[in-house]
Image (cartoon, rainbow over all chains, first blue to last red):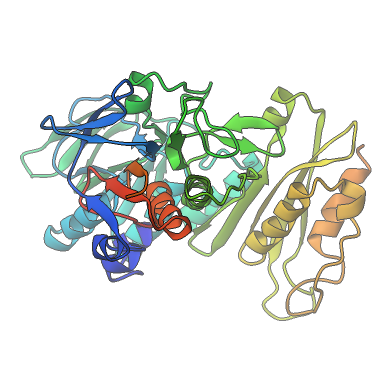
Length: 399
Length: 43
């Protein structure tokens, strides 16, 4: 959706995988603009706003997430947006198209904020990030986050760090005036991107158990602990194969897979969801950033003994024109030598390497194996010793 | 008529349940309920 707002994707219909008409053609009834009031477990029925009910034999819950709001005065003013649904993206884009939006601020510095920055700058909008912390995208090692900050700076994004927004008012000039701990700021558009939480209200009120994360508890069949009730996507938990814990990671690719697994189990072709390794990527201007597995903090929580290294290598053969540096961080368990996580950053070759390392994590490989993995070497694509090999060999020395 | 499947939400998760369940069991009677204006959207 950020790329739609940036006009990289022109047509909003390209973001709709399947229209209501196509669902109806395949015999699936679709009700839009229909909020559900409550789930009546006793009657096995769903009660709609307005009072009518629909009975079910099997219920699947895919209520997604709710954007977290800072809870400050003025957060509901016109021109203040969150980005969750396609509708939000359409409203933001038409706001930019209709008003003269010359400047924008984004509260938050996660990957949605990063993707929005790039696309607002593409539209020639002066962009300010208001970050409560000191570095963006804190899933990554501070060394990589600093590189991301430099990329923001290089592309003319203004960043306020350690800064809290206290209120938003509409000025006489028609602009949004933000009172922050770093002073006042006037912008035409404000996007709040400080995170999301699972929308598990209907489930919780109906007595469907939630996990420790606050998301709906499911098993490997996507079943909740209650008979004939399934949950999928961003509203439910997912099993992390590396930490061996149930986590909440709201990403669309995971939702697709969980949905298909639930659909198969409901449709009589049973299958188990194998879990995730938490692979993730985004682009920030000329930079690729990707991560997979767990970091030191999560590793400690899961009872591992993490050690890590950061190695900078060449994205392609060093002698080739167009070569650029790629940074790889590996995290492993000191007691077993098992790979626990990986992060990468660079103008090229970061995402592909994290995908490779995701397979290694999936298969439970140790550093010894990663250090000699047979990869598809050729000078235009990698050095003969890939940065993956170099990082694994470096980390082996610390075991 | 087969069993009745009700799906709350039509994002990546809910829409995938609908499509896959119908593919595996064409006799299912499926209703997908969405509070917003669009179904089956990409993030």
